[in-house]
Amino acid sequence: MSAALQDSARGFVARYEGARGHLPGDASVRAAAARTLRDRGLPTPREEAWRYTNLRPLAEFSPAPAAGVRPLALLALVPAFDGAARVVFVDGHYRADLSAPPVGFTTFASNPSFGQAADPVRERLVALNTMFAEDGARIDIPAGVDGGVVVLASLGSPGAAYHPRHAIRLAAGARLTLVEVAVGEGAYLHNPVTELAVGEGATLVHIRLQDESTAAFHLATFYADIAARGTYDSFALTLGGRLTRAEVHARLLGHGAATHLNAAQLLGGAQHADFTTVVRHDAPSCASRQTVKNVLTGHSRGVFQGRIQVARVAQKTDGYQMNQALLLSPDAEIDSKPELEIFADDVKCSHGATVGELDPAQIFYLRSRGIPETEARAILVHAFLVEAFDAVAHDGARAMLIAAVDAWWAR
Image (cartoon, rainbow, N blue to C red; front, side, top):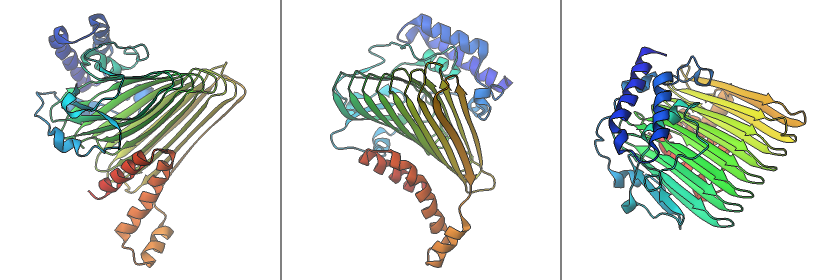
């Protein structure tokens, strides 16, 4: 481990030691997480799972008393949907005055349970979250109930370091559309851990818009367990953050379960964004789909790591991965690492990757119709990304993502 990252890990542990008496929940779980971080430190590129993402810039960040955020101004950036419930967190703390929560909503602060899926021993960022988690959203949708649309908004301010612990649970036959939006100002650390449980025949649609400040660190870990005939349909759009990583662990646990882990990353400047997935097929006749698109400008760097694990019992598995990248600058970089680990013999699994630049013939065609080159390039990039949004069935969420891309491109 680099000395800088070792010092950063020690700093986090020291802050935990000073605050542990005031943190809610099982102190033994937090203490075990602190030992993990003390003994193993933060991940480094020497570890295969972190080969393309270096947390060294995080060592430059020192949490400080939050400078204060303009919640109403930032909340104006969070789209509203007719009839949708809204849950708002400011610097990781629930704000009831800004929220209109759904039925079945509680907070981690009022019921501090760390759950079963997250593994702080294996995942050091989960250990970091476990040490410091103070609040988070807990949403339970009863069997057969349509929970409608819930907007989960996270607002960050300069100097803050917060570690929300979210849990979303759908009982058998339930439905929910969760729209998660993260925005903020200045340099801060947002390190959420989210546990998702999809019951038999249930459907969870999860749309994420990450548009944090370009000075912020966004390190998110998701655990999704999908029961028989259940569906976890996820789409993530990454626009903000200095250094970001979204790591998704999905387990297909029952016959006929399905998951879609789609994403798009639009990066510029010196931004670094990593989308890493691990899909475990632990039951027969399950399907997984992953399509990730990247548009990279400036000196930005995008990463896609996708692993499909097929257990011996998981016959009739259908797994698919595709990573596509547009490099709009000679200094931009994409790293793509698809993996298949198959122990069953009756499966259909495939993966692919494409990397390229805008087609000069298409640019020429548009320019020949009187469209300036800058606008022609924007049209082609927009078309490349919007195609990915076809996977988003909710009209309002799809419009939100397209509007966010248009606003990013106009900056």
